[in-house]
Length: 515
Image (tube, rainbow, N blue to C red):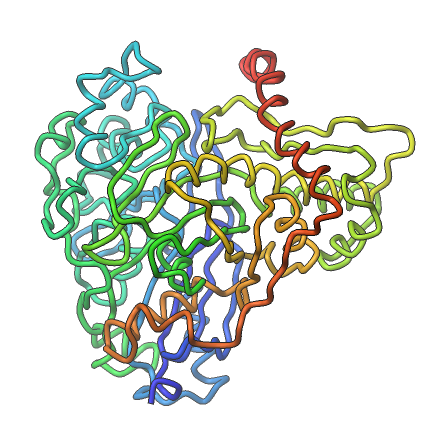
């Protein structure tokens, strides 16, 4: 039956939403992706229009249902996943009262610094230690997180706040649009760091942490268990989209969690690497833990009995998109498959060219908003193929730098690594990851839609069609890539070069970006 039953899955990425119809066995029947624009403004503003998201989602759902001739009774669930650490202000009916403040928005910087700032690495120990002890992390003094965003709204946008009932993560906002019910989970609110994550079965915001930052919990949606049913689709939305009014909607989940499920890596220490706009390395772990120095923590996971490693590298496959735009400006217009095929004509090591992919600064394993990307060792003989290959290798080398600390955090070697995201569609890039990280790599089946699949499989677990431990056995097997021993010494040298280059460049780049 689960092969016939469907989930309407939504994956709201920073670049725009994917909307798909996915079987409860995890087969993606069809999907649409639509780009959206991030609007940048004065003072560090970075916003998107949540009404635009909803219009795209409803339009795509209607088209997919008609295209596949899906009867409403086949769609048993709706599941929303996507980017996190952003804030949508909504009224009591779940309608936006203002734009979504994206995870890139830093207008809350002065208010975050006033709330938790101090002399020790930018923090007041008295204020930040309760966060680390209870939640595993804490608000960023850059203001680029939900606490900074909410504080900005409270101090600078009183008209929006006056009209607002809830400050919601995007996945929770979309879930409310389907149901009319406000909800959140420890996982969806993880980037706000306002729950005591030592007790995952306690569905409350922590009063001490709320007091430190001065946020009223009355503005925060009620918490409930991960993967639980929020409600059924509201009657008017069901009618509009051609869904049954009995279709359940499960609690919204971050893309980190959907990627974990979609990769099949739901057991402890099963590791996936996301090669999307940004990049991360994660796996389920048994304990709450924090590595402040390298911006790695464990956050509420797929249930009340485990956690997920969280970290983030600001530029992943986005680096290839950036280079594609640069080359297009020279008249060399290439598709992504053409770019990776071109890279394969340059030898391992790209004739000595090395690329550091810090186009938007970096978070893990070093938090530094001032560090910047660059090519090193260019010559008059450097070709486009060398540049493309050096970007692929540079992104992988950055992941290798992070993996060193993630493995220390996990207390073990992590292998194989399941690779997913848009960049993982390239077999060439998968092999470069295996060579650069020195680990076996598995290319997840249909890596571009792994999160759509993960959200649907979580719905299947909620509906008791499967158990979490089953998901690794569903669908076609992954394609395996083993490290090439002939280039092991070369890439070992590259792994050692990365932290050295960071130390070389960080001081003058800080001066340059501040000037």
